[in-house]
Length: 169
Image 1 (tube, rainbow, N blue to C red):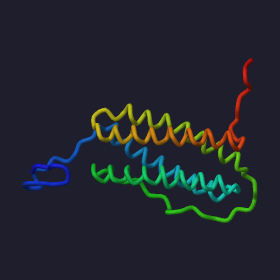
Image 2: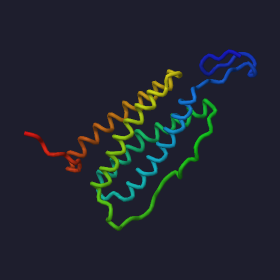
Image 3: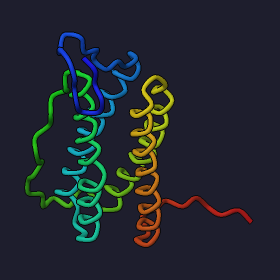
Image 4: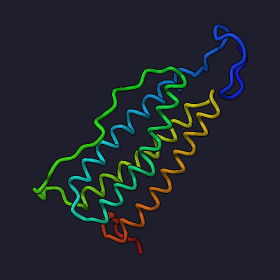
């Protein structure tokens, strides 16, 4: 069988399945699990947040970044016939009135998580040396994350929620 894009000519018994390195299989699976966790945490923070603007920021992070990346990662795992990890619930929703978690604290947790995930993206790029399109996808994820980080820096400074160390003279 010859495969050109999504078109196949010949018998299916001669088709060679796409090949990934062991590291690429792991990073694909790990990136998806990490994104699932990030979605659940973000949804939890949406429930805890009081500031309407901050809730919008969290909602945009879910739709513009996290869910899009999850869809791409799931498609890649399907394409390479890798078993998907268990999917979390579609949404995490509950009423909160305690006021124990301040928006500033929640923002800093999101901010720190994005800083950490920038390193995770770079690691994914470094591990993905065999499959060029997969590496390109991870590079795009990293660029998207850098834009989110930049936007959060600006938003956090505007709100006064970024911890700024003392300035030197």
